Image (cartoon, rainbow over all chains, first blue to last red; front, top):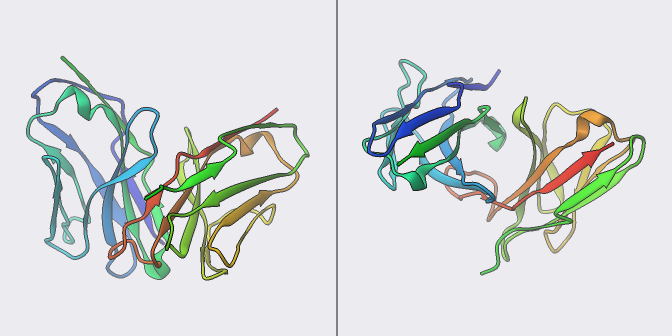
Length: 111
Length: 115
């Protein structure tokens, strides 16, 4: 079956630190992979996506590369800001367009 | 363009009651998906509707049901509420199914509390 596992939080970083949030998946076939972000008091928003192996999704300084060999889609940012404080969700879209989300990783960036 | 709207935003119900939540997708969007978000389980897929037909259903009991109307608005119903049904219920819409090509836009959610 399909599933997504992402690193437990919460994660607390100082401003300008490097961020990595790990995400691995189990899937049949070749899913599309996504990162969504939920800012405090707001709904989920698409952050980035990758639809095939070796694709790199990027947005707002965040990047993630679809690694089929390691079934991973780790989220990275070189220098986080206070405004990046949010909950981040890794997700996959499997057959029939059904979505599977990870449990979310809460990130707090302190000045 | 107005975003996805969900009503009501907050709801308190008693065990055993039933509840209906509503979702209005972005104008022109015909696909609507529902998710349950809880601290312990994260986001779990409930069901997806497209052109008034349920395309997919997640692993939830039959107490959870939904429908979509000809104007693409969707409702979900939970009967015989249990304490464990307390959650944030999120609705998402897209032009057609397939988030790889067509972005899903999420509503703010309905916070259901069962006492």
